[in-house]
Length: 552
Image (tube, rainbow, N blue to C red; front, side, top):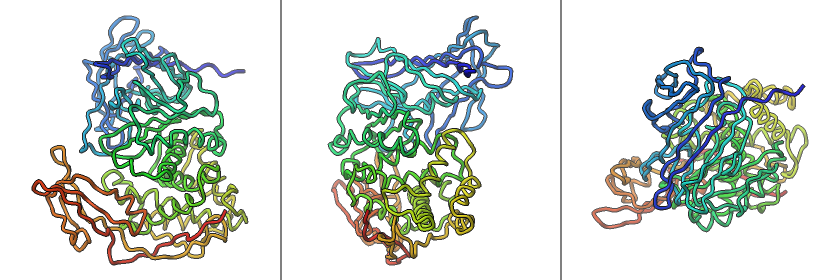
């Protein structure tokens, strides 16, 4: 017998424009009567924060509910500082129509970097994720969601895109109660690759969308995601899926945030200097990460969500024939350098997770340590199974894909599940529990005698000086200032001073990737611009490992 059709939740979006630019969106959500049950608690749940990013502030007066009997008032109950329950002021009769508005978030160069989910204005349009402004149905379950755009107020040529399809006509998707929130939306004078609008999404379809003019290096890679997904979807066992990439120009910040079958990539001026391989690695990382976040991530498995995309993205593009050999060697060694030279490499995973968005060293540590742990496991499982060569899928990849499938199907995924999968391959030949305890506590990962993909690519010890950027930065009144200098660092000897106003700054990632790369800052001191440069490394060296050559 066929399963009954799930209830349908409908979302209607109507963007408003002024002088040709999108200014706000009217959103109407229609919930069928059979999913509304006020007597058992709240009918809607609204997040006040998405990690460190504040969500849109709705008020009881500006959210309008309508049912068969007329107006339905809503009462907002703050459960804690992160969540609100939305409760109706009376019993609901029939379907519920919820009307609300969202304006783009105002951001400056001082806006803290966080998940790229807020609705922002860009290039005459709007872009962001539903988590910024939409509530979720409190009743967990499977639903059919439809999204339809009303472009009656839009200038000619306006396009509208949702993660699961291009409008304006109705697009549908079946998912859980968070689907509308965990997807991306874009409207305006959209450009794309493939260039032609596509209201149909056949299996394996992938497109990239942007507003305005992309930097030359990003534009040159506009087709990479489409080529990548055609291969990656088969590796991950989802050839029937579709994928969409949304790119936006940010006031500050460069990086991506993954949502369901999509991600939003922010770029700023610093992204213009990214090489083709750096962009390709980022695109691959974000696309893989989409498959790791299909359910709530616990602190216990955060290393997997960050570390697995970092590891797979270092070699899968080569296996697919999209990049050359030097891509693999470069990207592997960059991440090893990030891990071993990190001054906080011995911090526990718990400590790192508590400071993901406030401490750059610890945010880098989560994925670089996860990457190195997986590299070590890959070596051991390949050696035990005699599975050699980058073109051959390894036992670790089989285990990882199994875990991704579990997450995608909402099955439990925790360390016990991970240990059982390892045991099936390795038995008792690897003390994986003890290794995990060391990894979690912050013990340094020793790659002595390890190799990459085959014994032809030995991993050798090459100690590195500790990375010490040496400055603290304070945003103030629309600018950034040097607020502190690390005593004994090269920054202290460089001539940079507290109170210098920052005009331009080297990216810390670049120096973490490349041990000999200098750090620089252009500062305004008394109306005069100065470029100050120093070597962001200490005299102290730490154990580190690198791959000196790579053969297929």
